[in-house]
Image 1 (cartoon, rainbow, N blue to C red):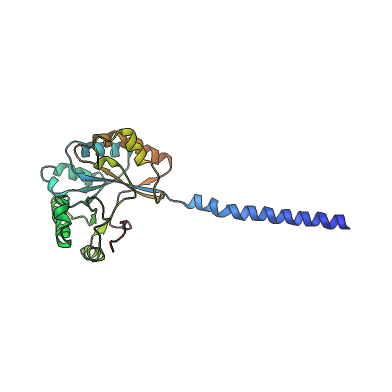
Image 2: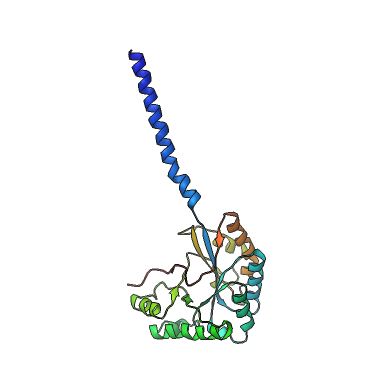
Length: 239
């Protein structure tokens, strides 16, 4: 009788252990299946006559869309490039008119005026003024609650980044380093906003871009262009 009781007890314990194992693993499995991974490729400081078209060629070849944050004073004379960005299904954002920090960040009215002027230049080319914007050097240290309210009142939405290439700091950054940066760890790996540049001297960015795109394709990422429906993403508001 004691032996029978002992065997029943062991069987009961094994059943509990088995059930615990099954239920403990279920949430992880479910999480992996339902996980959506998105990457937003973004390019600042264009349009340029050489690099921006090369980047557009690569995007077309890889069949992915991206977002270009344009500097207003660079648009005149390069309208065909701006049209191509738009006509090929990419998004256009505003990156101020002069890109000069001393002027842009002198006060909130100056900042908004820079965005408005750039919007006017874009509208002349594609027929509308975009409302997605990016701060030169990022919003960190510049974005106050007051400025945020004014921007929202004007219909603007801010998009910073959570992964970046150093091609905007050093044009000569090696292709290998750019690749490591572009595929490195991200704060939110399920929604990546990748910062790169398309200025005239960003030739290594063109070289590495296909490799970075292929990396994220292999990981199952969906490539999207930022639109006005994309949830706003900016750094912490200055206190």
